[in-house]
Image 1 (tube, rainbow over the protein chains, first blue to last red):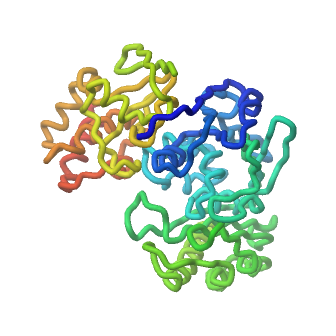
Image 2: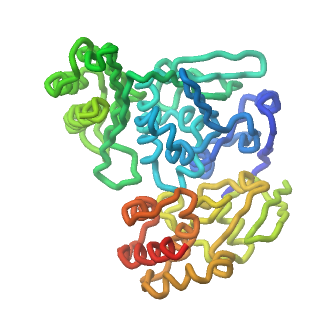
Length: 285
Length: 148
């Protein structure tokens, strides 16, 4: 490994971290599972690395009646193993529990998993399906962005170089159910051929679907949001026929490429199959 | 840069490049039980235990170990002889290259609370054995979980 003059900062507050990011080639470091690989392959050579592991205010899960807030430095393993969260956001917990392996889940953080922006990652579709927003801060400003508008391309997001994701906010509702399922034909810990996050929100009769979301990873440069497919469920009772019809429509919303995880045609077919299975899980039937 | 952490139960301060890999730093301290396998966090041969959780030392920048409680196979073998016994009694090894990682992963199993054979299997799924001696490894881990 190369020896470097990289400056390594260990701030203990968000304010201190944001002060430190001034330079163009500075980066924030979360768990490091992605950054260490980019660094050891010399794909990045930052002059300053700001490790966020010592900032208590970026960690933890808080739950109120109307929302869940998860700090950006909360580990994927903590999300995967959080029993109360599993009841409220089963799709997110399912996604967190299948990422990589136990070691990656222990090290990787929620903020890092979102900012890395590899389109095959499991967590983004599970969170976009439940209308998550993210809090973003810089030394001079703060803003909230819907996660559905966060991704711009392969490894590209709307984050400015001096901005940090501090928190993820997910609205909760008794009438909403969610799920995440993925297809990994090569090995359990691999990135998926396709992964599908979904949610169904029903009216007070607990039957009629009033809104739905279907979001896919692995089949485009960003998480792919199948709006038309999801909207086809509105007004139905989420019966099997409606779920199958919606799943068949996801092919219109995706842009898969041939690679070692399947041809574009194969991924399209698997997207329909796994969209149906995800919706079936969300419907509870 | 000076990085201090606890290694196998003893405080240590190292003057290292914080961007070097934990794997290289640990092996550089003559703790060569930790093996490099795939080098990309997939195989588990380089597993160390950090604050009770399993970590791939090949994708762990040593700066992120600052002030943490770090254990390698050498320290765990002394601290948890009964865990080593479980692997020996079940013959939970063949060629041996993955064995330190398997044992460290087993030592850290409390971090996820895996108890049933199915949970244990899912937890251990990230530690690969190219000899495919999985059943005896799983038996060893099941024995360890049952005793504790």
